[in-house]
Image (tube, rainbow, N blue to C red; front, top):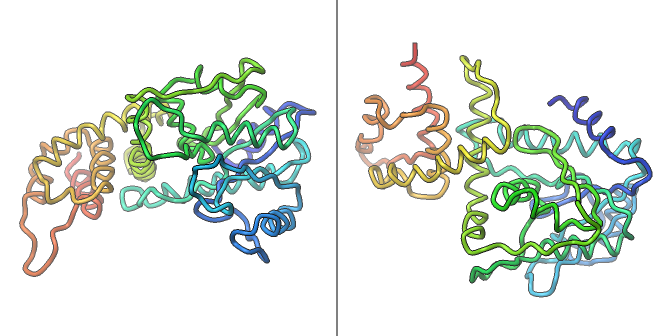
Length: 325
């Protein structure tokens, strides 16, 4: 989706007269330069953010027990309707984040910051809205886990949660948050609409929590796969949508276990699994080709460490492209 189309779609989709906010996740840095504030001083930080944005800013105070400095808590920027220039500018930032995450394809880490979490509409007061969001960001699961923060301010986490538990349950927890828009991994604008003013708490089963916690590796896989796919010289297949991406990437990650058992030294860290999963999505059956197998079976050069899939995947992809008529 082009920036012009994204901005137009977002502006048309927003309901006139309903207060609109941009969700910001500053965990990996601010989306715009913020100066003159102590890193942990709440009032000073809010003042600095409001000066930078030129708009009211509302901190989302995470519930007690989440050990995260206040400057890393998500926050909302209040917009002045659908014509606010920050609507287009934050859409541009979100699109640039997505482009950066996928730019290097298989050579990418897939870990680029996604600081624009989305655009929210609600008739609630700012305090009520931040409290409602804070409740959604608290881990709620049957699983035994030390985790306390469900980081839905990162739009990738929200997208993956929808895939794990379904849109109906995710939307039901919105309550008086009428709409939640975000840019998905395929560059499409997505909207979640609340079905009721009464929010329904979302509690994850143990199995759902295990799946949700695979999200970080899945996002790396999707970014590498889609980034490399966009650069392929022979790419006449229609692009998959986000649900299809997640389904295929999740299955590919499960299949990496067989390759990891076959070449354990090539799978030294989680990123190697993401690299191999992305490679298999680009070149199905890649593990059966003699040129790839020869590279993976080759011993390291003298005094050189053995290369893992994280660094080898671009070479293996090039070998497959060269061999494909």
